[in-house]
Amino acid sequence: MKSPFRIIEVIVFLLLAVLTVSFSLAPHVEKRILVASDDHNATYPTTRGLYKIKELVESETNGAIEIKVFHSAQLGSEKETIELTQMGIIDINRVSCSPMASFSPNMGVFSLPYIFRDWDHEWKVLDGEIGQRLGRELEKVGLVTVAYYDSGARSFYNKHRAINSPEDLNGLKVRVQKNPVMIDLVNAMGASATPMAFEEVYSAIQTGVIDGAENNPPSYKTTGHYEVAKFYSLDGHSRIPEIVLFSKKVWDTFSDEERAIIASAAKESEEFQKQLWREQELEAMRIVEEAGCKINTPDKGPFIKAAQPIYDKYASQLGDLIAEIQAVK
Image (cartoon, rainbow, N blue to C red):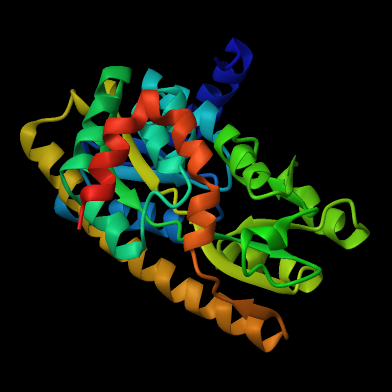
């Protein structure tokens, strides 16, 4: 749980930001101001998705509802902002589905390696009954799901060789997030999983502390990791979606008409964000290829087989849900 001092700090920050808007309004104008949070920068596709929600909601309500977007983790880490959203201090919050497993265990299924066959399979699941059901389950912990966003596929990159099979990972030290599933995956492939802060990865590869890492193409490019790890192997082991959450405490104060406007705006922003993501992926791949990176696309079969122990580990908790997702055609 976030410390009381941090909560007070965020509340004061938001009050000052909102009051700045309120004092600029004419006395007769009634306006409701909502706070939206994202830990990425202002131009990142997820943040631009929130700005799209802002644009649509403000237009449809003739400015009666205004949304202030706070990007670049101004309001805290993902875990902190999720808790603040439960409290109703943050109204709208974009986070990865990965930390949501701590709040609703079934969300952990999205972190499993190769759970989605490809992009089409992922969005059939998310937009279908399974994704909507898992989204509704979050209402039990005070969160309303209004959209899923794209975050692409994560793949391995390193400074030594192309990864064409799990055996090629043997002996490599690979940076991972502090996520038990990712640690299990990398170790199952024969590499040495090395949890490390994201901002330390570039220098760690450069100096040989680690051999590589794993991430999606835009992150591989924007971090500059492609400069020190030239081999990028598109195994696509992880497709963890993003999720846009609304505080249930706040959601329940809106009329049916207002909720319909917000839900429609969020859904439209989902398509907008997915298109932005695809464009950014293509641009990132163009840049890293022009920089001389060696790109390969290995057969996923051996990697999926090597990941089977992870499924065995989580079968008792998520087995039925895994089967449901795998059955979606």
